[in-house]
Length: 355
Image (tube, rainbow, N blue to C red; front, side):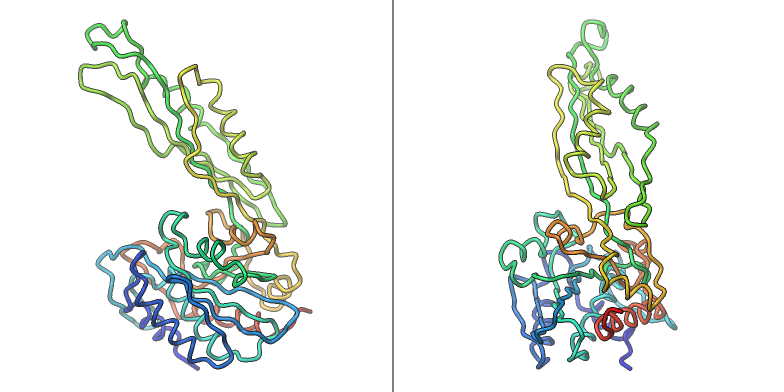
């Protein structure tokens, strides 16, 4: 069997920081074009390879090419059964599994679309998957999708949505020696921040998976000078919401919390809003995968690109090697057991029909 850990090390040594994935995409494209049972398309720095066997079901296996910037960990290093290096967990290990499946599984029981896309680690407007859905949605037509984000080879089902709002509180300037002549906008943050700090999040169970919502103050800004009562203060809130709550409901929920503190002249603006994705584990293909392999299933608490598929009616899950808590850290690493467990699960998905 191919040494997947060594293969991942080769990918780690191929630099692909966001917006600089072009050379890596060239290499991936060349590797896939050499596989006779695949048809390959290139859209920007996104590479899509597909089987065309006429199967009744089509599955997308997707993974992003890019990494976060280097943190003194650019070079791959294998120690025993552990690979150290940038992107080893997020997500060169998942890419190695996808590439090996693409090369070796010529007769899958489902048609497969392998999607290697750019710019996942930056703002969503740059996301290569979004680019593909806009430019070539036909390439992403499917019945199911699996993204190889690091989950330690467990299934993290669906994902929570994310909302970020910017709230501006107003006041009136004055000299601090005569503070009573003004109104301190920064002081107005006190009551709303105490309310946010006391927020009790829901923990709903959606299709058997327990999610955990959250509401956090993530940015505060205010002040003019050391002797001026500030007339403006800005507060940013981030709400993570379970997939049983719509994007509009999430906005209404946060607005209702802060509304008692808003006055004429204040503002409430949406800076970012992405809906969540339901687990989708009731699909017989996914249900069979879980049953045959006794895979741990848990809710995905963060937001991932599975939401792109879910909002188009395509059930999607996260399943990949590596520990997500190590992603984006200098200590990022990947163990052989996680890599091989992910390989075994995805090989089963592509070669065993639903029961």
